[in-house]
Image 1: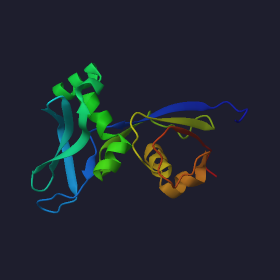
Image 2: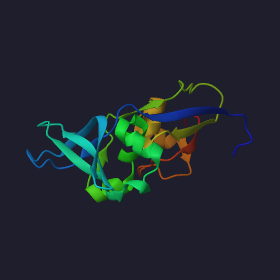
Image 3: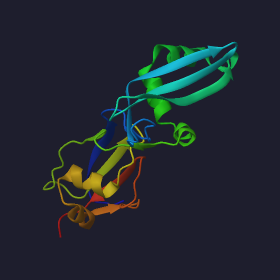
Length: 186
C-alpha cells in the first residue's frame, strides 16, 4: 500500500431483480425463463415430501418446475425451512435460486443482464491521489471487474485499465469482493 494519503470509496453491487434462467422451454423451445414473484410447490406423498421452485417461460408463459428436494422424509426438513417453502419466503426463494447445486441438477444457468446495479459514491478524479475502492457483492453477480470499474468511474474500459492497479484479473468475471487503486491520469 502507498504511504501517500488516499481516499477510500465503498462500492456495492446489488441485485435489482432475480436473474433470468437460461433454460429451454419444453413447449416453445425458448431459452429464457423467470421465477416471477418466486413460488414453491410442496407436495406430500405419505411421509415423503417433494419441493419444487416454479418458473415461467418468458415467451409462452408456460410454468415448469425445478426440483429442490425430491422424496425427502418429512422429518429431514428444518421446520423453519419447511415453513419458508410453504409461505414462499422471498429470501428462501433467492437463496434457492442462487444455489449452484440446484442449477447443476436442473441444468440451467443464470442470466444476470439487467439484474444488478452498482451503488457507488461519485468518484472525484481531480481530488487526492491515489483513490482506493473496495467493491462488495451482496449477491454472487458475475461481472467483469474492468467493466464494473469503467462504469463506476465513468471512463472507457481502456482508460480504466490504464489507471487502475488491481490484485485480481480484470478480464475474468468475479462474483466476490475485491479492491483496486485508481492512479492519476498519465
